Amino acid sequence: MSFVLGDRAATGKGRWLALGAIVLSALVLGLDTTIVVTALPTLSARLDATTDQLQWISTAYLLALAGFMIPAGVLGDRLGRRRMLMVALVIFGLSSVAASQMTTVSGLIVMRAVMGISGAVVFPVFMAILPTIFAESERPRAIAIGGAGMFLGLPLGPLVAGWLLTHYAWGSIFLVNGPVVLLSVLGVWLFVPESRDSNAPRLDVVGAALAVPGVTSLVYGIIEQPALGWTDPAVLAGLVVGGILLASFSIWELHTRSPLVDLRLFLNPRFSWSTLASIVMSFALMGVLFVLTPFLQTVQGSDAQATGIRLLPLIGGIVLGAVVSDRLMARLGDRVMLALGLLICAAGLVLLSVVEADSGFDLLAIALPVIGVGNAFAMFTALNVILGVLPESQTGAGSALTRTLQQVGSALGVAIMGSLLNTAYRAELAGHLTGLPSRLRNVADGSVAGASLIADHLPAPLGSALLHAAHGAYTVGMTDVLRVSAGVMVAAAVLVGTFLPARIKAAGQRPETPKSTQALKALNPSGLVLEEAS
Image (cartoon, rainbow, N blue to C red; front, side, top):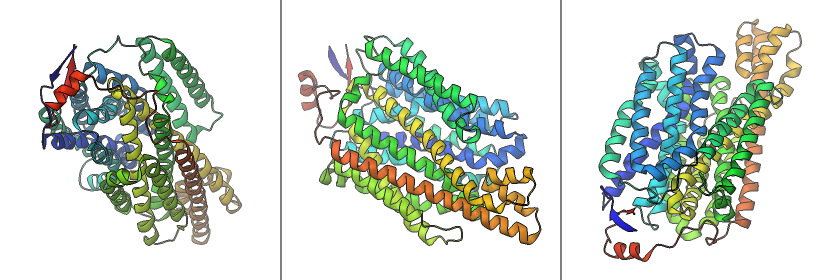
């Protein structure tokens, strides 16, 4: 076995330029997750799409993203992370441009699925690249910057969508990906060195065949739940089939000689508790964004662009947390930082729960940055711990496993918090629907947007009363969601603070660096990335 230098090693400023290229790829994917949701009303009008078709424009992307992530991470470890990242970015860019030119809903749904598959490669591979170009002392800062790119795209989506849809045609929300992806591909090609597992075993085809439909089916059932209910046959089928396939996947992975991903990583408590913290953060925050955006738009009357502007304090909090997280991590340690991030985020959610339907922006401007700072502390610390304990040959697969679990957590957050919101909303509104025809009652009872639509067509006194009641009912439901989310984060903080070890345990620990590598690193103080070759 020998070690050779990567064909384009990241040296000096090169590694930070490489990080810039990676951040661009993460930003465009995070942005694409929420930009389409904001544009759905416009897509409905321009493409004459039904409600089911609109849902599939979002769902096709999310299902492909979640289902293909684990095999994609494994392929990155085996075929080369830089190579796979460039291929995925090119496909994502081309499919984005193609999506902008679609004239039918079916064509757009297909392109969204292709974008999801390519995105499934980018997410785990860009995280797996970071340990190969940054020393352990610099990795927390690199992860904070790279992770900020990924998470900043989520709240930026409504802002960018609102501006583009105000000034340009609907295809611009996809076409904007093209230039950003082009810059990212150029940066990856010039500055990111190649890295891979040179002793990769054969690809676990059986594991992949179980993982892809298993995750896809489970996430499908969760996504459909808010609209159809937990007892709907489609939801039950998705959950049951997904559960059976993933249970079979777990059994197979634990017994096969060359697993798709080593599930024994969960025997390392640092890996398992950090993964739990990231899942809880994804679960709670996606549920919060799910209820907060309609509150800003429907209850408080903001348009898409104004909603994005109101979310800017959240972005500011994430940036601030990213800037200081690596220094605090060095002083306080991983365990304290994880628990602290969860508790700060919980405090922001409790503060946000005080907001009323007619509240001004002041309280939002205070609560959202607090949530952003807590999110940055917890998520970036968790990512650093996870990458620190993953074996070098499993950085792509392990990152993909963690990201997949976060996707499931996000979907669960939307489903469970959506159910909680609907239950509280209907209970609060029930006494205000008497006297309305049953068909109108069902529309108003279904959503606050439906109630607003009904109120607009009623005589002034009745319409105003219904609108006020619906806004108040939605606010009560949102308050319940925010406080439950805060409670989940506090519980996770207590568990992480109690059980997360301060030191890496043996199970799943990164293997000791061979002496031949140590010798080369002694001759390589500038930080050249080494590529292992047999």
